[in-house]
Length: 446
Image (tube, rainbow, N blue to C red; front, side, top):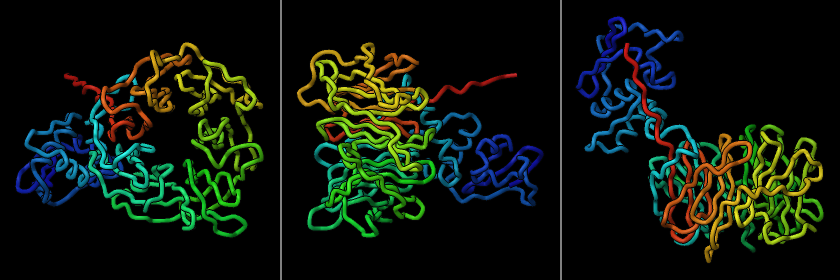
């Protein structure tokens, strides 16, 4: 590398390139080019006229232009996977992804891809990874895809049905499975995203004895705790807690009488209140049970159930629930996609305040509908129903857009992460990827 004031020269695979320190600084401190600068972002002094890098010069030209303009142009004769491999070498993978799709906005999402999976039958769950990939649970298999939608070796649970999956980080996936009678197994395992190999099996202990169990819904906290609903053989029902760093069990919240925790459909960690939302919903149980658990005080600090509530035609059973800390409420949805709200400030839970303006389902129900699912992301509320996902915004949660495609059948699950929305369909083993188009690069001229 040679430097004349702000100019920098590279020899990449025998081809010469010249650029500026300002362009290279756009790569960021964590890139290969970040090492060329001191703590004040001034170029370090070197004695060479140029730096030689033994890499693909054609890819370097594309990535250098990305740093110059903020736009990514991939020549038709250049495999995108090859370019991404080179971006990884230079530490520019985040720049590469940002140029492919923009910051997530539910009202600007466009269908990017539809991918047919390898496993037969209906999927259990789809989970978006932090880097734009995803994993899909099908029976006793978990299929893992990177952000380029290349499939990694699957995670094979040896005929144990998968109940839930979740990403610990960009490289590790947690899987919860059913116990098999006579085998003494079940529970949870941590698996490698890249190889599908088991890295750690999490044990459940009661009175200092390791027990087999069925692990269900999963959730993770910001202080590296893992939560799972658990059902043991000897009525050891409740929510287990494990330390993500050591893999050791640290707590167990036993299910109170006349309540439901071990059969939970959903767990959600709330960072603001340091509590765990636990929701057991119809039809897993005849009644719905929603509660907040405070593990510091070892008590249930809020609860609601529909036991004894009158069942009207319009207000069927609650099918999903999600906590919304900003508004001190829990949003619920019924099979008609009516949205309802529970007040977290009401000690007894109160009754559901149904919002008739939010009814999004029109016409007849399909013969085999999927239960609606809810998600909240960056102040936007998402609700799936049949073959579409509705996006609602504002203090009154007004319908602002709808995501739909015509094939694949009803949406059985969806997930948001890595600036993407993934939707898993039921009738065909296919999932959709929705992305926000990148914002146009504004140029200024003096």
